[in-house]
Amino acid sequence: MAAPGALLVMGVSGSGKSTVGALLASELGWKFYDADDYHSEENRKKMGKGIPLNDQDRIPWLCNLHDILLRDVALGQHVVLACSALKKMYRDILTQGKDGAAPKCKELGREAKGAKIQLLVVHLSGSFEVISERLLKRKGHFMPPELLQSQFETLEPPAAPEKFIQQFTPQQPTLDAV
Ligand SMILES: Nc1ncnc2c1ncn2[C@@H]1O[C@H](COP(=O)(O)OP(=O)(O)O)[C@@H](O)[C@H]1O
Ligand SMILES: O=C(O)[C@H](O)[C@@H](O)[C@H](O)[C@H](O)COP(=O)(O)O
Image 1 (cartoon, helix red, strand yellow):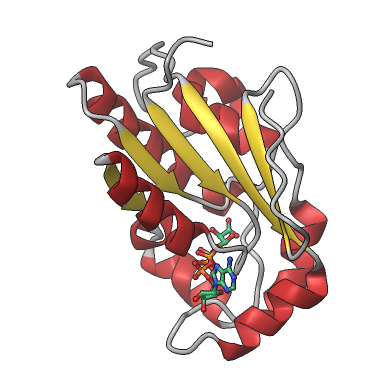
Image 2 (tube, rainbow, N blue to C red):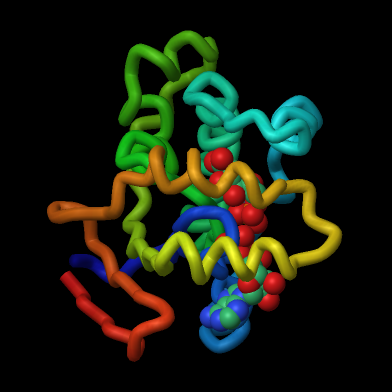
């Protein structure tokens, strides 16, 4: 693939996106965004009540993140984004904006831009048990551990033709670059 303009660090809640994403950005000298900081108040409240987000909740959030990535990449700024991006369709929106998810994005009534971001996906994965233990220990976060089951159920791991690296824990780290 062409050199990526952006790295997406994805995975279920507690997989380590914020931690690993910030470290990667610091190592690379790239700008870091945490998608958690861009959720609407409604989305935060919903998750806080233990209700999983649905496509309708996530699409405007992802479109906004796409716009941010596009703006930075167009300026030559390399970016690391930590974002759950659990479904293929969500990653398509991050890459292609509303064009990539035509019917639903049209409902948002925004202009299509048609620009595509070269995105390398880093998927952080681990067993339910390991990640759930981490979430139970994590303090001061709006995401309740009981939503982890729905996160695993929603997850569509990246697969070809997506360009991705998969990092498993707790086994010895395995890097499978495609
Ligand atoms: N590789 C890791 N090994 C052990 N603990 C980790 C690892 N990565 C993250 N953590 C811890 O797990 C919790 C969840 O990490 P976080 O980065 O907030 O995940 P996410 O952003 O995917 O929800 C945090 O308490 C963090 O310190
Ligand atoms: O798409 C979603 O359902 C959310 O983005 C979710 O996956 C994310 O996990 C929360 O924002 C909590 O934040 P953490 O991932 O940091 O737990």
